[in-house]
Image (cartoon, rainbow, N blue to C red):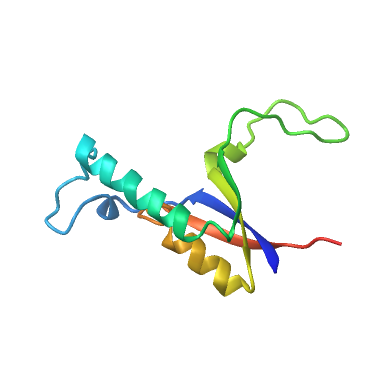
Length: 121
């Protein structure tokens, strides 16, 4: 089985995708909505436990390393493009995509997931 890197990415979204079908702006989820989302996420984790190699997480601060040393920015920081990552194991790219796309909240307006095979020797 191959390993796949899943990168949660910010995507440019037109203003109209930030509204629901009635034209109202998306509201912050209620505590009950958040509890339900966490329950769906826990169920997804349990269902795909054999495929999840590393749940990853959000990215923090960092620095671009170059030779010769790069002058100060302005550089786009990875954390501005990538919200988080995880590594999954699957028989194929399509299998890894199925695991990633089933994750509640991972693919939504303004955010997508890029799934890339990790080649190892």
